[in-house]
Amino acid sequence: MKPEEIIQRRVARELKPNSLVNLGIGLPTGVARYIDEHANVLFESENGIVGLAAKPPEGMDDPDLTDAGGGTVSAVPGAATIDSAYSFGLIRGGHLDATVLGALEVDENGLLANWVVPGKMVPGMGGAMDLVTGARRVIVAMNHTAKGAPKIVPKCTLPLTSIRRISLIVTDLAVIEPTDEGLVLRERAPGVTVEQIVAATSAKLVIKGDVPEMDLGVAAAAA
Image (cartoon, rainbow, N blue to C red; front, side, top):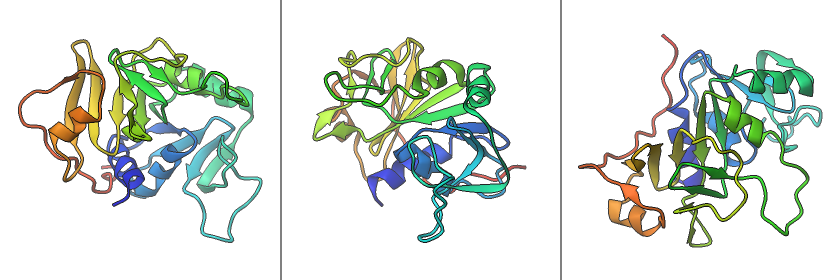
């Protein structure tokens, strides 16, 4: 199983039936593929789609139906398109049950850096700051390392997205929960050892007893 599929499948299991969830651009968008069709999870994109679905089959792309990163997507029956002001009203008004975002770094305090690398051109900060502040849960979906370097670090070196602590980190190696006592290692990916996770993480991890493997099955349907 590819690293991104591990991440997307595990994140999908965090999303509760009958919830409204924002999917960030890139890797998080693929989470939509692993939700039971009867779970009634409604995906939102900050550029103005409520009812976002997975990327359409080849040849079925609609250039007028894109996610916030400009990638083509599909929509579920009954989906709505809204303007940017209404979309950010949903986000800033606390109406999102969760957001799933990528990250450049997360630190021991659970703080996220994901919007800019100093010195590199960036078209804008997008909705990241609003999402981390406004959503009820903030789930980071990312690879554990970048070019061999840890992305879970003692202190972020890149500009922070928000001063609010995120809710959960899901990587291709582990599930880690930021808490008052630190970063707690909750689960490990299939075939991955605790020692491998520790070696790939420069931040200190809190490890309590046996760490179970991730369940990567399709998320449950609504009751």
